[in-house]
Figure 1 (cartoon, rainbow, N blue to C red):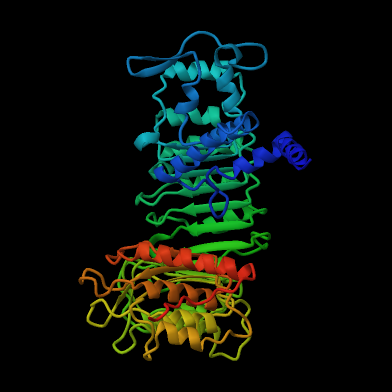
Figure 2: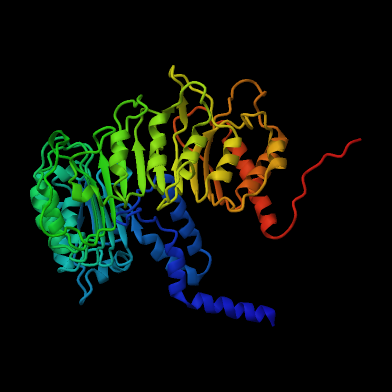
Length: 574
């Protein structure tokens, strides 16, 4: 009877194809944070999700079709799809379509039934002009044949998202653009120097405005071009014909923005809710203020990128700056001064919507210049994922404590938001530009006690140093007293800077695995994952040790949640 009921439940589940379609769709590459484009997956991750879906196809007949559709839902290029068409032939290095494929109202049914089936399944497409993902070199005759046979029907009638990376002005991708664009497209990302060419703003951009009327998310990103572009004149006119909700414009090395652009842009996009800007006027001079009617009335998220070192970039008019929710400082030199960000922080403290600050650099920043960000601003996120922090003599290993104390204490004012994410780089230098000591394990205990509301943190530690006051792992475990409000930390990203390559004297001892996993489970009861930081560091010889510590911690957590007591491991004497 039990087997019969289980069989019925399984049959009921397999009969709901929409459930299977949804489940398998979760394995395809995700969208970016703002939803405007696809995340560019690396070769390894791309192979992983494709391999998983191929395995699902082989499980049973009911899984085969939904898994296959999910596999075709994202394409890195059009070559796999085009090769399905039986009319495709290679002649002298170029590809042609031979014969007719017309059959009733469905293009390509006779010669390309399988082609049409999977063309309808494609939901996201990445087109790039470089590497192994290049599209087949279709001849001009092949393009003409496709256009004639499609009869006005889009090549990919179900396409939702398109990532278009740096084609030549006259290329296969440019020829396919008019055939790919569809009224169903919701998000498009254009990337590369192509954006500064006349071909883009005179042909491709207006084409998008006409052929993708339901477009809601648009991303334009060119990091290399340093010559003036006329896109600033054509962009507002095209955007005014779209109902965009998300827009990202990044031209960091092209300071040719006209001062009136922001006012015109604001009037062209009344429905915009999310905006990212990395655009700049000549010499980063002041931009004209937009006067008159309120601009961008529905804007909720605004990310501004500064390229004036530690100062607030004057390129952005005040009406935009006062609505910023996220700001990035790009630094192209070391920051030795302790008050380098002082004037900027004073300005930022007047922006009540600001929630996130990021420092983007490969250079060294003085620790003292960072502390005011936590003291004076009510941030939810502070990230400095690269570069290094300079620690003054006598303060090595204490910078994390300083950041936590500045963010969560030491002030009588009521904070609007509390810090939820803190990311610091892996490297620390002293005043003589030598690598210095790193935070001990006791810094994690301090975070658990005082970081109320912190959910994610990235930091380097030196696990061979339990504490700064002669603490040991055992003494920290025995003296731990759970705070009234338990730590909310969920993600711990660490780089263990424990010295290696000095014989076996610094190797982890078996007892350290147990004590570290026990301590971490005690102080961070809601911790979900411990991961290892990536970055420019030599001390990667402890990564596997931390994988073992994480396995042990997860087992302890599972036992604790299940209500079973975990007894300490004791070796019997005698």
